[in-house]
Amino acid sequence: MSDPAIATATQQILMAVQHPEQRPVVKTFFDEKTFTASHVVHDPQTLTAAVIDSVLDYDPASGRIKYDSAQEIVDYVRAEKLKVAWQLETHAHADHLSAAPWLQEQLGGKLGIGANIVQLQEVFGKIFNADTRFARDGSQFDHLFKDGEQFKLGNLNAIALHVPGHTPADMAFVIGDAAFIGDTLFMPDYGTARADFPGGDARMLYRSIRRLLTLPAETRLFLCHDYKAPNRDTYAWETTVGAERAHNVHVHEGVSEDDFVNMRTSRDATLALPNLIMPSVQVNIRGGHMPEPEDNGTSYIKIPINKL
Image (cartoon, rainbow, N blue to C red):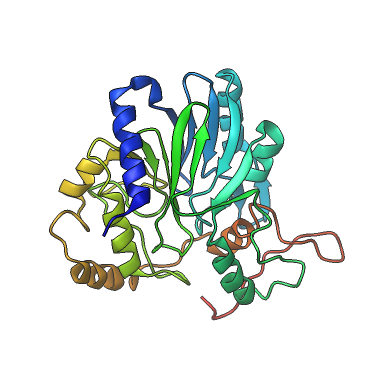
């Protein structure tokens, strides 16, 4: 079956491979506390940039937030004289809080996420018993991307690809020859993302991964996390489609859908929830904003008992 979005992305990537001026510059900031890779990607000709999957520093013991990690991005953007057009989220993260609203204040840029965020807002709105002030229509974001939607980053062509499975709303953003794929694949020696959160689906994740792996082998893949695979001493967050096809320990060529689903389901059953899932989800479904203040002017993170 033809896939027009993948065909467009493939043409874009091959053109960028052949024409270096169409290849974006990528700078990654790794937060070891949450094992998160945030990326600043920019067009070398116009210096137009996007910030992808930023991290807000949050101390769960005190409930205090800081902006040290996000400030590193601000310093880099200003030093390189970049113009931020987008603050992009590949999905509503369950392991770190987004710094996108604060970065918007400092640097500008429209906040974008996949259109299916409304599904997660509905699901988690119920889980956390959010009141009527919490809109479940995606209005906390400036733009909701649909599958196959094309956009520009300066002179660079870009396209959004819906890659559900980890959550129903995961998006990959292909900019030039670089694909920012969120929580789908990890480094080849580590494998794939979990699929057991509300709305997750291992079979859907397999199909999303196979979709991504139909992109040209030269496609640069930038990941959202790394946890150091056994026998590897350094963190890594960049690989290629070709390397994933050949070497991914969970889903290399030849792994069937049923085998992957059985592996992923069994593995997920052994995993603890992320340490920051409670604050992260409540904040990230709100576009990085804290829950609405209560009558004393203070925002609170809820912890539902026996719900997750």
